[in-house]
Image (cartoon, rainbow, N blue to C red; front, side):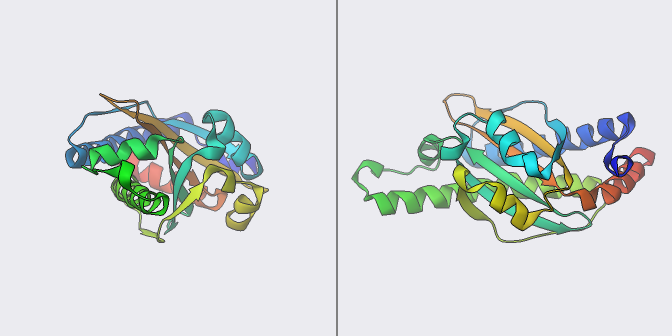
Length: 210
C-alpha cells in the first residue's frame, strides 16, 4: 500500500541529514586514502518502482550501459543494494591515484585486473563507510554480502527481478561525486527494498526523537 512506503516530510528531512553526514564521512575517508578533495552533490532521495529502476538509473547517468559498477548487497534490519558507478574511462583515471605505473605496457587482462582491484578498494571505502554510518546513526544492524563488479548493461530487468519484487517500490538515495583536480567522477546509489520501509520509518522515528 502507498501509505506503507510514503515518508513524511520530517522523516525525509531526517533521512537527508543522515545521508549528508554519512556520504560526507565516506568521502572524507576516501580522500584520506587518495590525498585529494572530493566534491559531493546533495544526496537525492526518490521513491521508484522496482520495475523502473534500470530506466531510472539509465536516465540519471549518461552512457550507463558502458559504466563500471560495483554492487554490494546488505541485509539485516534493512535489505537493499549499494552501487558505486564509474562512467566508462574513469576506472583508468583511478589508477593514477594509487600510484599505478607503466599501465601502457600491461596486457589488457593485467590492466583489467588492476582496474578491478582499484574499483574494489574504492568501493570498500565508500560503500562500507557510507552504509555503516547511515545505519549506525539509525541504530540499526546491517550485514554485507561480498561485492561484485558488473557492467552497466548487466543492470537490467532480469537482474532487478532476481533481487527485488518488480511490483515493489524502492527508496533510492543517490549522490554524484567528483575529484577536485581531474575529470574523474562517479555515483553512489543505495536502493532499499519496500520491505525495509517500515523498519526505516521506525529507525527515523528513533533518530528524530533522539
